[in-house]
Length: 143
Image 1 (cartoon, rainbow, N blue to C red):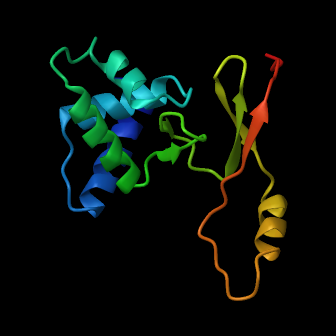
Image 2: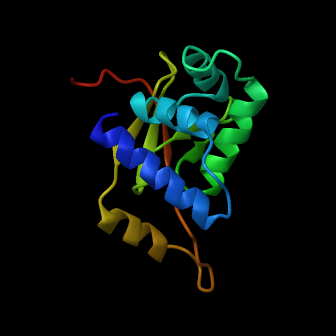
């Protein structure tokens, strides 16, 4: 097992323990599938990926694992209009860009000063835990 996978499993175990849960092979495989390819997959996409490593895993089990990962603050749910929920392992403050032509979702880094400025526009007495910014359009990312 390489170092980054071992660290991810250690983080998973720690977060699960903090929530009074235990690590399972299913949770590890689902978490690995999200971390290996950071493309904001849907539950169906995660299910397709993990079946090669765990043939008998059901879609319901994948949904339960994803819900646990969200509850433990290991991944975030990303929602766009009426599309399927997607899952993002990037826990840093950032925005998302949805490319309408390809359907891909990209992380967009946000400077902390931008987040601070956005928090300041809230009316008095409002206290936001986080900010979700989603852009939509088309893109040709430079690689």
